[in-house]
Amino acid sequence: MMDKDFALRLKNISFSYKKNDPAVEGEHTINDFSLEVEKGSFTTLLGPSGCGKTTLLRLISGFLEPQQGEIELDGVNQKGIEPNKRKIGMVFQDYALFPHMKVRQNIEFGLKLKKESKADVELKISQVAETLNLEDLLERYPEELSGGQQQRVALARALVLNPQILLMDEPLSSLDAKLREHVREELRAVQQKLKITTVYVTHDQEEALSLSDKIAVINKGKLLQYGTPRDLYFKPQDNFTADFVGRANFVNINGEQFIIRPEWFELNKSEQKGDIEGIVQSASFLGDKTRFIIKVQASDNIITADLFTLETNYLEPGSLVSLNIKHKWKN
Image (cartoon, rainbow, N blue to C red; front, side, top):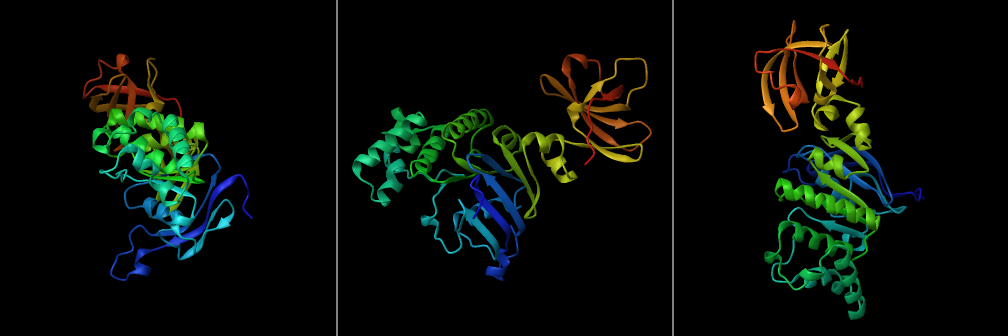
């Protein structure tokens, strides 16, 4: 029996489409993948396109069966259990709302399939609409809603079924940057309020860092590192994770390689030589900071440094710059 603190456990999962269909190349293959997701947590599967994130969601939900390994939900092995028998809610990238149905009908669709009583349906719709601030939108059609409102309706349709675990496949990717930031704040607030176990797929590292209790970094179907956002950012265990979760400089110091984030540099304001001396190649104004591309003197190394804008107005391309290292990490 699985430890009750875990809602989901993936044990040595392997899967390849090629084994199911010789005509299909082995893309999105999952290789000996193990993961434990704590109850009530928000876990993000983070990695580049084609690394296997969505395939993992399909395996968890039962639309695919692993060729090796086991999937457990609340301690129960899911082998052979059909998707509609698993207590899982899904929110898709395109929301998959029925355009000919009003918001109320979209939300109640799954409840009616389960043949719940009219009184129970009304009570559950009222509760989820209040939680997600949808009371004034129940009689509208999806086309009358903003992208953020549609996302909340899709979330309501999943939550109203009281799932053990919520799976979300890049649900914010179609929103513009400003709205995406607002909706993810709403999403995190709802998840924390309901304490529903959530597994979220994205390739956006900022999204993963801001939303997650834990992040699983995946590349080519393999789990590279699993930990808190701070662990992954400040203590990446491999170069891929360091470079994918934020920006990273790989700098040799006294024969050892260190990871240094762009913001871990500061201008050296003393007359003494800094930790790194170099020539500014380019500068990009980003508001409160300016991003400099710098060629390190006496080497072929190029580094990226994010420096406080008000201190760097005089650093034009071609300028000599002296930097001190505030923090570095050796994996």
